[in-house]
Amino acid sequence: MSALIKDQFLSYYVAIAEFFLQNTPQVIFNLKKANKAGFFGNEKNKLTIEEFSNCFVAPFKGGYKGFWEEIYHFTDELFVEQGAKELCHAVSLFYYSDNSFEIRSALEEVIIINPKCVVAKELLALSYYNDQMWGNAVAYFEQLNTPIMFFEDYQYFMMGWCYGKLKEKTN
Image (cartoon, rainbow, N blue to C red; front, side):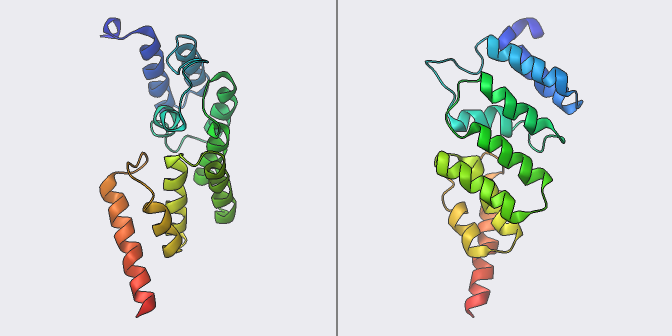
């Protein structure tokens, strides 16, 4: 089977498998190998923030403690749009910080740097949702056309819940 997969792809898939085994050195090693093989683009063909999100944030959701710091440093070797480093920092805070204000500030910084970052908007909407800031959550949920982190149905459920809570406040 692996003979059918090009080496650049194989290294990426092995990195994902190693991630689930929490083997950080092998994850980073295989991601670097995939990068050298051209999997993540080049100087002429940079990864967009959405492609970065699809390659790193979505498959490595959650990430164990210290994982996002490793990816943060790995972004130095990638050709990617602005905001990737900041997104790594924000994702790390989202999963490991108890300070909602700090999380939202980091996510807002990503959006300021790169307003096209869907993941930052999704996580910011979810942060507002979790803090019962319904109007703010709706404002960010409404900006999402194609979510990366959640299923579309989940997004619509949360939006509906927020609208319901906003209506309760006005009654």
